[in-house]
Amino acid sequence: MARDYLEQPFNQMRRSDRAKDDDWIRDFLKGGAFGVMATSYQGQPFTNTRQYVYEPSANAIYMHGAKTGRTPAIIESNNRVCFSVSQMGRLIPADEAVEVGVEYAGVMVFGRVTMVADQDEAAHALQLLMDKYFPHLKAGVDYRPVEPEDLKVTAVLRIDIDSWSGKQKKAADDAPGAFLWQEVAGE
Image (cartoon, rainbow, N blue to C red):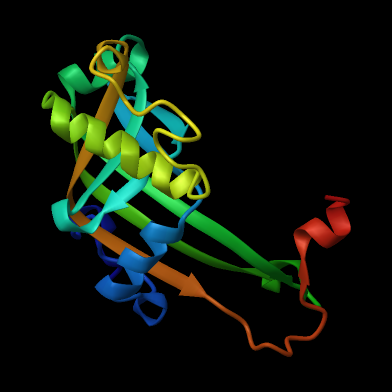
């Protein structure tokens, strides 16, 4: 009898041989370039690509955005989210089209998103984002640090993580014909 996948925990994976542990997941989230946040309103899913920062001490993900718009409106009525960070590796050719593959790594986070109300926490989260994406720039030297008036126009979102899963598929280093997609796509 087939497994009832809809009755399994959100973070349970079908391919446990590709599952990664919590330390790997934390490291992956720290190093990810961007993520995709999925929300839902009245059965209609929405996704938003976001810069983010993972804060291990809070077990949370921070992002920033507009205080008004579809995303803030949706999370007011349904704050459950899924957040995904992924990377594509090499493409692996095969003799049959159904056997080709791709290396990948990814993390799926399940939790609840809220707008950060505390100004100190919001300013801290914005600084964490600056430190992640612009580590070579210094507050007060290369840019004006976050001011209280900035927080009147910028929303800081926090995903409180309930559960997560991470997985990775990696072929042998000498996989025949393996190549990076960017090498053949002209990028």
